[in-house]
Length: 172
Image (cartoon, rainbow, N blue to C red; front, side, top):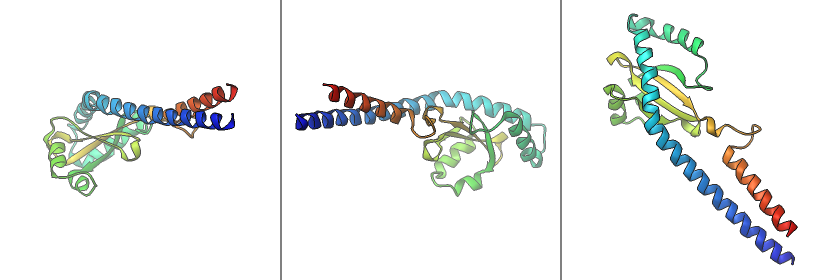
């Protein structure tokens, strides 16, 4: 009976691991699609407001005004908001910014969107008013916020499923 229990428990655990991998893949796919379609519009609006605020000022005053706005809007770690000003030259030194990406940032068509390292959210890059000054807006990935400070939602779901499977097999 012990061997049967162990075999069933391993089978259920493997099923649970498969479920976890499937959920992670589906969630990541849906999140990427959502960010690709939705974010351009959301980020574009933030950049339009930012450009209109900075337009009457000389370019030398942009960083100071940007910091003032940042203090009023709040941290981009919590909600979508302006994170920093940088330049095209500084972006070219970052990994993942090839000539094509830099040209896209300069083109001012749509914000250039890419994931923040570690899956912490999404960052959008946009050259302001046809200059080499680039505003970066970050949107944190709230769906990956840790539960109890330890587990992502998918990991928590997997842990609960596994525990319920083990309990069901144990009681059987």
